[in-house]
Length: 475
Image 1: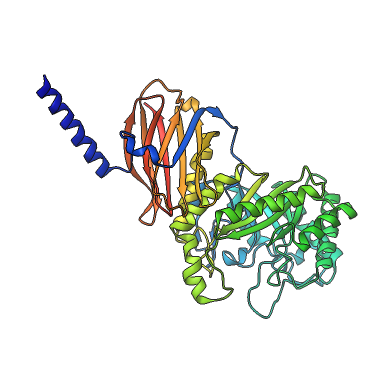
Image 2: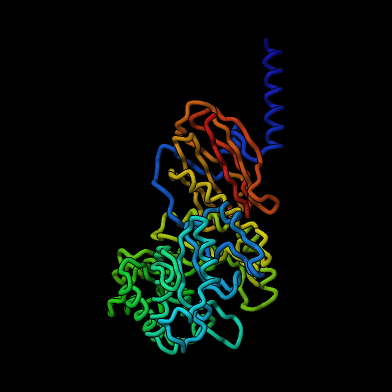
């Protein structure tokens, strides 16, 4: 009898040893795991749905005469909103006011003076995905000299009327147009930096007021917003904008601003600062949009080296881990929506695709997040460490017998974690499929195992710049 017990113990030990060698997420078997940092998921505590924070800047059509269409890639991450800004990087002669109405001295009431066709095609490719459009009224950024189009319009009232005609074309059928019911209209982009606005602060405030009032007079149900700042809303222009809207009773349905950072902690603190500034001025019910955001490890303007080295990290594993972390954290902020910059390739190799339209690591970060959203119901989690970009978020679809957990480590020194799952409401066994996104994997299946307990723990390898997606499905 003792011999049989010894043999059984030896076999069990051998299998456990082999499992530890071959797997990255195993059932906890030893007291050695007691000191590991811990994630906890409680499937019984639901927290409602997910906010539409996985929007992007830029649609699926790529430049070079529309030779490339990335619609199939876009479907993998399901953006709820797509913002139209800097579209010249992906499809020239679209969206910017000077491309739609090239001769500012022409009659703005004559359809013959508008060039809508390329923008029509561009927007249709977005709507075909099921995404909503956020139309930025203005011009794309101009990094170089001289500047051509980012100057204040010669006539603010006429510019506002041109914007009104654009709205009429896409929502009211004007000029052989459409009835697409585009709701969100954003006035200009980053008027707080010289690359986007050569005018004064007062000129922007005046342009916003005139344009917003013109559009709301056309249709009170439109959502008009700004100021789309490059910096925080507690900045000089941010404060001035909020005060001006209050003083002049300028329509303001949503406030938008941008954040680029190399730190998840800095990123989230800046959201808190900007949102607090908005509420301080009495805008309690306006929507808040983070209309551009991304991870930037370094930025040296037009430096070729920064483009090659610093911004390359944005599309590599560090950028993917950062993206998952802040998407998880942002669920618990006052943000109503957010749009990652960008979903097109640019000269800075900045975002989901390179300049040739080839997908990079960051697209798989959005894909992993989209899988969480698809299940529909967020559940309680703990274990976030904002200072170093450690994050966890979980979702469930009880009717389908599915639960998913998404974890990320941006830059924490800990490389192994204990993941505890509580109150799984399925009586039968569960299949756990684990996917990894890191330097060597693109959300690839790493391992599968069968679990049979209502409450269980897994040991997860999660070094820096790593994302893991665990899908649990009732058998």
